[in-house]
Amino acid sequence: MNVLKSLVLGSAAGLVALTGAQAADLPVKAKAVEYVKVCSLYGAGFYYIPGTDTCLRIGGALRLDVAFNGNTYDAPFWQGGVGGSNSYNRNYYATRERLNLFVDTRTATEYGVLRTYANMQFDFSQGRENLSGGYTEVDFAFIQFAGFTLGKAVSQFDPQWALSKPTISSAFFGGSNNATGIPQIAYTWQFGNGVSGTLSLESADPYRNAGIVNTSFAFIGPFGSATSGYGTTSNSFLGNAELGNHVPDIVGNLRVDQAWGSLHFAAAAHEIHGTYYTSTDSGSGHPSSTWGYALTGAFELKNLPTGAADSLKVEASFANGAAKYVFGGTVDTNGAGRFAKIGDNGIAFGYVLDGVYAGTNATNGSSIAKSTAWDVSGYYEHYWNPAWRTSVFGSYSQISYGSTGDALLSAAANGTLLGTGSFNGTNTGDWKFSIAQVGTRTAWTPVKNLTLSAEFIYSRLHTNLNGTWTTTGTSVPGVAGGTAYQIKDQNLYNGAVQIIRSF
Image 1 (tube, rainbow, N blue to C red):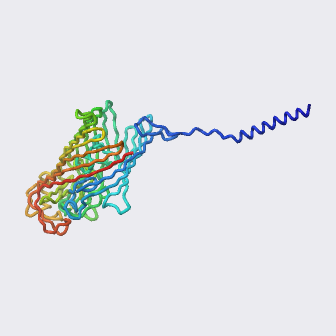
Image 2 (image 1 turned 90 degrees about the vertical axis):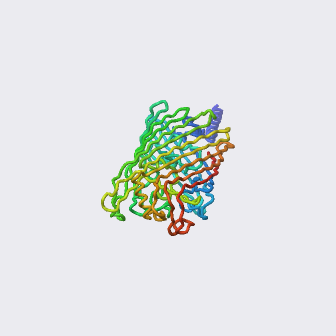
Image 3 (image 1 turned 60 degrees about the horizontal axis):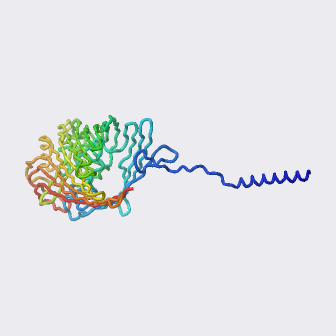
């Protein structure tokens, strides 16, 4: 009996031990994997970051551009230099390859949505880089929280559709345009029913400072040495006395957003100043600083009778002492808004400045004679079918300096202070200058997120100056010194093709 009992107990112990060993060999059940989940709160493309309540979207585009008879961004040859002088050495075409990447995060909080956004560009432009190099830029980088927008974002002066204009060219003049963002601190009030208002402080450099000229000193004429690249050292041509940010621009807007479209009204206050005493110009007087201003109104109409996806966008602006709110664009001209074009057996040139003054001693000199500028522009886009669409657009922009500003500029020009040429005799015209543009773009989207487009633009530079202009030295590329040109309006033609693959 004892033997039988020992066998039974031993067998049971063995079975328990064997079972324990087998159990130890079995795989342990893994924790549940935190799969990426779709976030449908903020539109397509957002996902929850695993382990958080933050939604993330990463996207971008590859963009290929070729401009004909113009600069990169499909900008006309109206900036003087090789292109503006019709030199044989000018580029007949210009190319650019761009990779765009953006990151957009959003988190729902008790104060509303907390959003961060950054947009980066990796570019290679013909004639700007070495064979294998390029450059990187940050167009937007901002945080939005509890009504505030902090960082580099589209100006609050611009309408809601500022980034959706149906053009290829970002050099097309249509009022204020800052497609690469402006550093700002802004607060937005939501009044309900699509009505909102915003107040912001925005950096004036480099987008908003058109420049102030002291006509008592030589400054670059219609042609001359190019200054540093736009956004690198802005407004640094000879005679420009507006350097350094003193006070941010003060901008406010009122907006309406509805299914039928949008309305936008905005105003801006812009501080301008002349030369203050420096080690290199201690004998120069300076005027008291002053303020300019700008006003704009814009609307967009959707769901037009011509087609459900068609749209019409119209904008008009006025500025006094704040010229770049009218003559905007992402391509600055050489020398604080210097426009110059040789062709059609003549020359047209003019300046886009915030103001003009004269001062040659330790007194304050003259006060700043502020410029007056205005513009109107419109864009209509029609969808022939879901894959094909065509837009037509046009604008007219004008700037003038009044009797005081005209007298100062004419005295400088007749006294050869423009440096690269002189009037034959005394100029009897005024310095009012305008640009008219019309263009069209046709785009084809054969498959989703792939668009091929072509654009053509006609521009006319209109000048109120009279007489002839004679070059000096070799300052005008490809033109011998002493060459005389009749001052008259000039026509420009340029175009571009583009391929964009978005993702």
